[in-house]
Structure formats: C-alpha cells, structure tokens
Amino acid sequence: MVYDYVIVGGGSAGSVLAARLTQDPAVSVCLIEAGGAGRDIFVRAPALVAAMVAGRPPIHNWAFHTTRQAGLNGRRGFQPRGKALGGSSAINAMLYTRGHPADYDEWADLGADGWDWASCLPYFRRSEGNAWGADALHGGDGPLQVADQNAPRRISRAFVDACEASHIPRNDDFNGARQEGAGLYQVTQFHHGPRKGERCSAAAAYLHPVIARPNLTVLTHARVEKVLLEDGRATGVQLRRNLRRQHFKARREVILAAGAFGSPQLLMLSGIGPEEELRAHGVPVAHALPGVGTNLQDHLDYIISHRSLRPDVVGLNPAGLARLAKAAWKWRESGGGLFASPMAEAGAFLCSEPGLARPDLQIHFVIGIVDQHMRRMHLADGYSAHICVLRPHSRGLVGLASANPARAPRIDPGYLSDRRDVALMLKAARKLEQILDASPLAPWRGARLYPHDGSDAALEADIRARSDTIYHPVGTCRMGKDEMAVVDPALRVRGVAGLRVIDASVMPRILGGNTNAPTIMIAEKAAEMLRSEAQH
Image 1 (cartoon, helix red, strand yellow):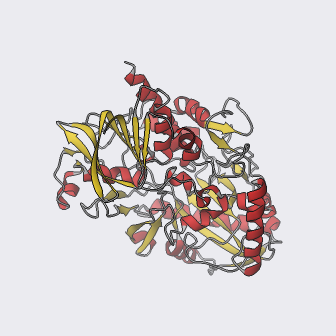
Image 2: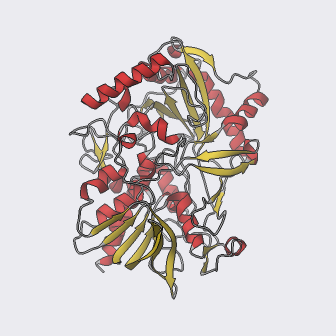
Image 3: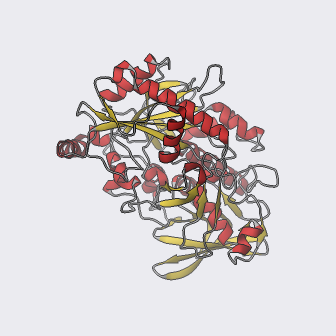
C-alpha cells in the first residue's frame, strides 16, 4: 500500500490537508485516524459538547491526564483532546477566534519566516465561510462555516453589559480591526443548508464532503505506532488496526498531524527526539533532536461559578433537563434554540493594565455551571465565567511514559511554574470578580460556588486548587531556525527527509485566543506549500 502522502491524524489539520492535497486527482493520500468518523449526534449537536469533554465515558476523547503539577497543589490536570475525524474541532465549543495580529508577527520574529500576520491572513480568509460574507479580514465562501449564534441567552448579553459597566468596550467582531472588548463569539457552525445549526468541525467542513474521492483513502480506528525510516528519510508508517500490524508507504512525504501531544510522542516512538528521553525508555536513537516535546504552552483557566436566580440557563435538575429535552426537539426541527448553543456564548479580550499593545486576558462566559470539566456535576441552574492568561511565561514538556505506543504520553504543562503567571492570574481573577459583581448580572446572581475571604492569599489558594486547562496546548514541535526548533518554517522535521509536522505543535508561541482556527490556517498554508513544492 503506497501513497504519495501518508497523513497521521484526521483532526483539524489532517482533515484540511487530506482535502486540499487530493484536489489534484494525480495525488494519492492516505489519512490515518485513531478515532471514528466524527459524524454522530454527539458531534453534530453543539450542546452535547458537555457529554464529550468530560471524558466519562470517553466519547471521541483521548481524555489524557497531566503529571502532578506543583503549581496546582500537586493535582493531576485533565486534558481532553478529540479522537475522531475532526479532532478537537469535533469536541470543542466551536468558538472562532484567531488571536491578535501581533502574535503572528512575533512568530516571524522568533524565526518562523513567512508566518507573519500579512502572510497568514489570506489562509484564514481562504478557510472561512462567514455568514457576514467576505471583506478585507474575512472569507465568505471557504469550507469552514462561521456563524453568529442564533439564540444566545439573555444572560450572555447581560454579561457583555456587565463588561461595559466595568469599562471594557463592546466588540462585535473579535477577528476584526480590534480584538479588545466584550461580545458574543462567532462559532464554527453550519449557518445555511440542511445541516443548519449543526457543528461544522474541520472534518464536516473539509473531509466528509470529499471522502469518496478515488485518490483519498481514510482509515479510522487505526493507531500509528511509529514512522518508518530508511537512511535518514521517512518512508512510511507502521500502524495497528483490527489487531493487525501493517505498513503504509509514502512516495513523497509522511505528515504528522497528531496534535501537540500526539506528534511529539510519535516522533519519539520513532527514535527522533532528545537522546536522554529516548534512551530512558529503550528507544533506539535514529535522529537526535533535542527540541521534540519541549516548549509546551497552554492557557491555564480559572473559573468562577454562581447559582442562578433565573431558570433561563442550563441546569441538571428535573426542570432544567425538561428544558433541554424540549430544546433538543426544536434543534432537530429547525437547527435553532438552546441545543444549538456553544454554551460558552459570550466572552471578552481585555488588558490587565492600561497601555498594553494587545489584550493579555480572555474570558469565556458559559450558561451553566462548569466544575472540573463537567466531571463534578451540580443540579442547580447556574452560570460560569472562565478567565485565562493569554501569553503565559510557564513552559512544560511532553515525553514518553513508555515505549509502548498504546500508552498515553507524559504531559507536564508546568502550570504556574513561573511566578509572573501567578501574579497575572491574581489580577485576572480580580477583574473577573468585578465584572460578575456588576449590576447587569444582578437578576441572575445567586450564591458563588467557591467563595473565599477576599484576601489575595485566599484567592491564590483557590486558583491553585481549581485551575486547569482551557484546552489550548501548543508548541511541542515548534518551528524556527535555531537548534531547539523541531521543524523549519516549511514545517519539515530538521534532519529527516520526507517528514513534516503540521498541527498546533509547530506554533513557536501560544496565541492570544482559541487555537482551532489558527490550526486550520496552518494546514491551509502548508497544503499550498506542499502543492507548490511538488510542481518544482
């Protein structure tokens, strides 16, 4: 079984790559995904994100855990990642944000030539099918449908009003000329046609419509165990499927698109990575590359939840479940209503202090109580607000827990290992408390779930006791030109021919926003690189 390209991982990047590369009928592609097809009701119905993200049971979810985090009182964090075609875009809250333009210019300054904002914007526009239509900053006819929410709750609009009352300006487009402000998120959701109101994952946007192409082979429920190497070149992959071990060969290239955890793990299982790490697990060193698995960055998230005095939110009590059942019927009939909600309906990008060139904090406002990724359930009607530091100084790593490919990687985000992040999280939490105490939210404001005595010491203790990821791990195969870079700016693995990494792991530095849309952009840009190189 020989193909031009073998792509490992059918997530946000892999779906884009497979669809774009097979636009040329002369190019053959094999896409290999460990999960399923990503077409079922859990993926299609936006409100069912709550059932998937909790990982109990793990529906389309790798449900990883971190090592014990010293900065979080020795707790193990939870790391949901998508396990299906569409990857994490199949289980996320569908929020469409790109980060700040200066983030991309910073990538270029760090050695990622060609990844500045002016170079990346055309690929955002190419991917985007925004309900607003096309303009200088948005695409109107791309595969990824981007929609306004069709029925946001009144409390979400009240949150925006509360931000205004706290001197945060209103912003109707976080991807427009100005990122700072508060508003309702746009979402990756079908906004017209027979699938209106359904999640528009990367697979639904790019891959499912073309999956029958004769030059595209898609394997699901297949676990890649390692990259095959011959004389310093990647020639294919070894995988296990239906209890059988098979080899799939690549004429041109093997592309890893397994994400910030999967791609570095697979490199190391193949003997590519830090020598000390490989030898510790008995993996023969094929190519020493010290940067593999380093530079892990993530957005650490602190949540404040309140019970609601009004029932027009999500609750798991009998009345709330009855409302959800009624909403499910409405969504089935029209694609609208509460079941079409991303749950994280409103948000804000804000500055921790005046005079900053770009926002350094982000808020997600959720129309239900979120506690430990929905793993701790509450019957009460309620709402939650999440705040994260957008550019943390703390760094972590991904390593091997074992040379067994079936074992999860060792994930150590290093949360709050840099004291500067603690100080900024304290400022962030104070700003969030101020917003949630503003008068527009008074009609809903019930008791706070985890109150404290108001002191900085008590607040820091609460941050360390309850904070965890907001699901944006990046950077573990970063691009650049220095010795610790894993890939060059063309996303080729340094020192290994015929092998690239194309996913969120290549980001040199984490972005100021949600990471799904940027990952899709990376794949769009990379697909054009590959097509161009093949023609020369």
